[in-house]
Length: 278
Ligand code: MG
Image (cartoon, rainbow, N blue to C red):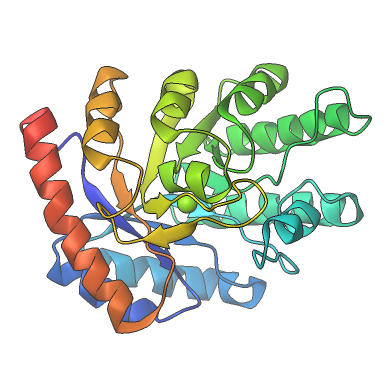
């Protein structure tokens, strides 16, 4: 199937429960957030791969997360997330490479991350970030992997310029329409068209704009209940010939998360049939 459904799973948080939920919903794919270093030994990788195999779920993307990152507020993200903060840039680059190697051991060909809030092209730091991203891309290429950048922390135009500056064939985008709204970075459908050529994976997630976009967080809501306009989003995906998985991301925990995911699956089945006839 050209557009398999999937969910986002944090390996360190209730893996068994989420694998069961995914199986029950007959989801054939998942993106995962890489576990801690201690969980990335050869022995544990074998066990992890076996769990996914037994659940009949293919891992499509391994996401990097870094110690010390905070999503508490938009300013906190600016200061702490991804490869942007200077104090941790070098060690996080090494960590991202280690996670890429972990993904390779799992036979996963896509590594993804929030690179952080990309500074202005005129800032002193921009060129170094471009160089670091190339370094990571080249590491991934040696692993026969692509590197996907998550959207939201900057406008689509700014991200596009960064993609062009890095200029690596294995660099692509994981498009999260809700993030564009949550961070106040731009209207998601317009943004999707702007970076269309690079979009190789995505998050099906929804959100409402905040009263002060770019200053305060918007609010993440169940899929189909927010201001993304999922129907238009899907028609635009068809327009840009998107042919990857449809990965549901719901960034809350507990029972409510599983209920919302179950409802999202129904919506995605309907939209997928409507748009692609699948
Ligand atoms: Mg996302």
